[in-house]
Structures are given as C-alpha cells and as structure tokens.
Image (cartoon, rainbow, N blue to C red; front, side, top):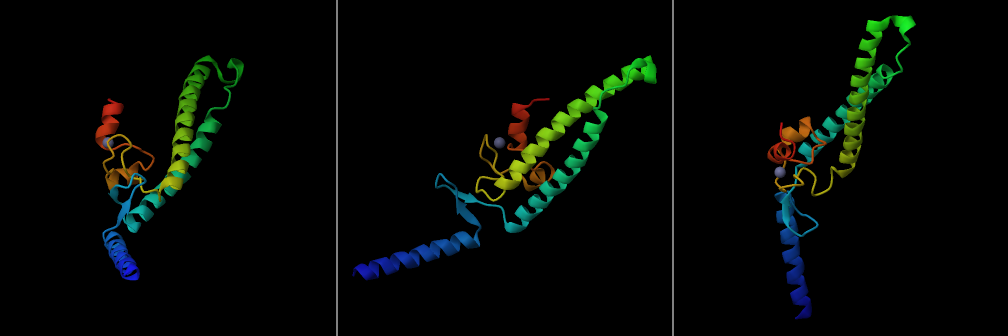
Length: 151
Ligand SMILES: [Zn+2]
C-alpha cells in the first residue's frame, strides 16, 4: 500500500514536470508559476547584451580619450580652449553614463537565466521581448519606467 501511494505520487510528479516543461513554466522563488522566456528569446537577448557591451566598451575608450586635460591657452587659443573644455565636460558625462550602463549589462548577463529575469521589478509584469532586445539592462516595463522617470 505504501509503495503504491508513492508510485502514484511519482507518476503525478512526472506528469506535472512534463506539463511545466512543455509550456515553459517555472516556479519563481516565491513558489508562483511564471512563464519563462523560451530559449531562443533568451539566446537573442544574450546576443543583444554582448553586442551592446562591445559597442559600449569602444565608446568608453573614445570618451576616455576625449576627456583628457585640455592644453593651456597659448597652445590652442582662447576660444578653441573654451570649446575644448565644454566638450571635455560633455565627454566626461558621457563616459560616466556609458560606464554605468556597461556595469548594468555585465550584471544583467549574469542574471539572464534567473527565473525573475525579464520581469519588471516594480509591477512584476513581463517586460516585452522587443524592449529587452533594445534595452536589456532595464529592470522596468515601459509603463513603470515612465512613471519612475517622467520626461
Ligand atoms: Zn512595470
């Protein structure tokens, strides 16, 4: 009798595992059922992240180069120097921004297989695949991103 019950349990467990596998369903840490991204989508996002990292690395190098100290007046002339200082601070700001995004992308690449990846951290709704391809580092859906950062 005991053996019979456990066999039934095992069969039931196998049945649910199959259903979950077929429908790409996984439980998140809270034990709720979540519909995870299919492997092709995850692979595309991974590629998008890697491509973005490569582009940003090049940008960071460029911004670093353009953020070098500006030569003194007598070397390049007063007006040119003012312009140079102006663009230097713009490049410095761009450098900070790119470095931050690069950091987020590296963290995002590590988290891509987590069951919570691709879900808005605010409303917990899935973030559209197209948005993740363009902005894989975002932790928010469009709606929440606009509410948090209104333009
Ligand atoms: Zn949201």
